[in-house]
Length: 482
Figure 1 (tube, one colour):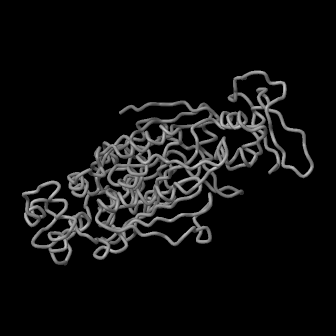
Figure 2 (cartoon, rainbow, N blue to C red):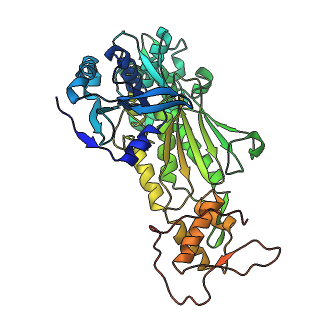
Figure 3 (cartoon, one colour):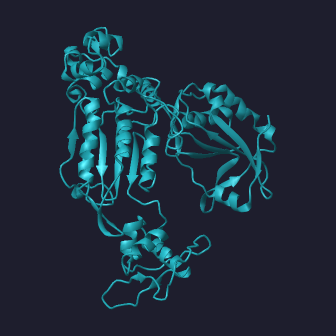
């Protein structure tokens, strides 16, 4: 078995040996036993995937611990690793491998990229492991393994049976309106049985979420949307709340549309400094709608937490309880599909004007909608218990272009105003933009006026447009001028 061999430069090796172990990276000695390595393989496959470098190990020295290169004598020496990979069932099709070599270091380092799997992968000791920070931890209790089944979408909470009166879903205003719109001659009692949202005379979680008028009374803390408005650009702190958090309730169909409408109303009241002065903040309704729809339809209903929408002065955060399902990761979310709650996704699409019109295309639609307004793409991050999607109100234009557009209308610009416009947080980083523009002949510093903040302006002698070349210009680090 032969794999790609890459020769690393001294700089690449130095960078690799200064990498810290983390939730996504681990280093192992070439002497590690396959059984022990299988624990790390299991952990990465069951969580978010990651990179393992076999042949780089930690050693103690007088200054603490450091990573050293101690690779295999040849590729064949790593065969036991591939044997254990092939022996872990579904993992055999969910990894890639390559070898690294160096002119100065001895031996070959095996670089394994482990992908998140849809299935649960157990190590050779038959235990299931997950990755938490820089550790691979076993799931000792069956309850924890069961929780992992929900996380991966192998089991869906939508099918859980509830001990409630069936009238909750067969005699509600929601299902009556749905039947009149969709199947006028149908009978709600027959419908819920045929669609398997009532089993053995008991409604399922999916049935309650879709057809109950008030699912929140039956499934508290896991079926509403909380909307919070923070008058700040920094962290979510109680002192910055504009008003008490709003709670949106109702069946899933109404929940999605009501939440989008409420978020829109709040956003329309926010202003942001723009090239022409204070401007209304504008986010594409398609992006809000699609991301909220995904947060509701694909969340893990086994987690006792509501969807949260946090509105800041410069961004919107939409947090959905539960990790990404199946093999989905923040990196492949636009290219792959996996429905944690397939019954909910399918049945809500049967409503008149369904919220998930293009099934499976919601995330892509949100990305495209942000691009149409020349705003940066949504940012998807995953924590231990939730998925966070952030819509930033930051322009796709380069900082240089944004500064020059502002100076088309205003005589001067300060570091603070420029950071407001570009979304750059660091004063020194913003200064680097100013200096690049100065070096290209587009900007000069205004004469200093006592008691006035330093400003920048177009050169008085500038007679035309000068191209902005920024790639080869150095950065600078100067003190504050705010």
